[in-house]
Image (cartoon, rainbow, N blue to C red):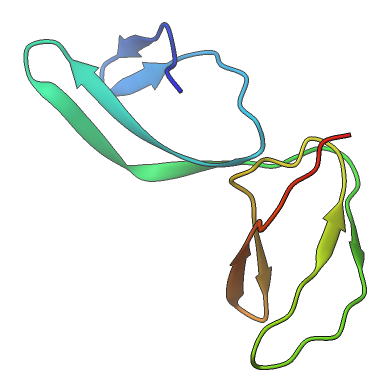
Length: 92
């Protein structure tokens, strides 16, 4: 996705954009110089309540179902320091 307009104030980028919940990294395109990577990321937290259905799992894996509104396809879940990604998503 592209942020359509932004301004600078010294080394600060200013923009307004509606992000879905998730983590975002940035690249800035300077016409005369090319792309500049910005090493920091921003995290957008979702508002609202999420529920997780209890499930059995083992060292070999498991599955957890999370129900809520506006869950981003880029969302992750951390359990015991391990990161899980979305396997499937259903909009309703």
